[in-house]
Length: 288
Ligand code: R5P
Image (cartoon, rainbow, N blue to C red; front, top):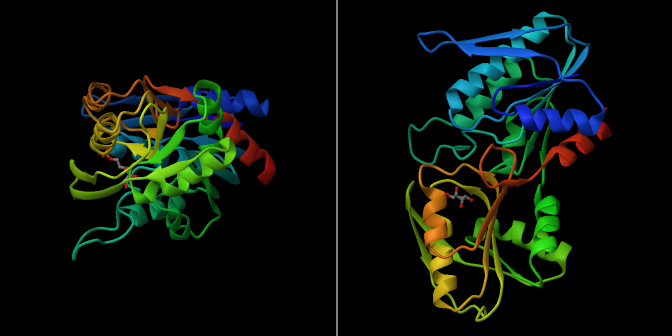
């Protein structure tokens, strides 16, 4: 039995289809003052899968997740496998400056205390977030699914990481597609200001696919596109796992010269063309 929270209804339905499982009806709404209301409209099995991404609006989606988990525990569910395709607050997994909250730790503890038995997420910003849980926590990779999409749409591309942190993604994809990979060097000056060093890349006339875990403001990708355009790249495809896409991020990326932008359905967006339903269903089937 699968329960899809309001941020992941379509993905939950697709996971249910892949697993030949049923969706449990869930009613969610907001009271006039903004407080969240949920009701499980049916009987629950002893084992349930809950799917809820905790992207924007993060606090509301998290609260809804806590309410679902606590409620089904109270209704007698013994094992709750909790799928959080996009893990909000995942970029603050440590205290970078004195006095800062370790938000990912707080969120992990609340998810666990609310009743999760296991957690499944996809390309966590830091794999170490799994260690913040005292229950089994799994970090799945969407790179094979993204690589399939790239392979179907671009011939022999250069896979480019827009910063060092994304190099492992570029390597994973280039291994699957048997093509080259490289990376750029980036310095983050503030949450919405990044500087990327130009670099000698042999991309003149070549098709390039940029891969990152998250596209948020789009600043990282815009810088990479500018460099690729200057160096004479032919077609630029931009890919990511989590299309957070704050405000006009997508427009900025196209304006910088990207020909295509693609992401997965860990978050709902107009570029969510690659589904992680199969990946999640396989992981759940293996662990049951
Ligand atoms: C950073 O380490 C991440 O991998 C992404 O590069 C970053 O979150 C993208 O943010 P933005 O789109 O705001 O540049």
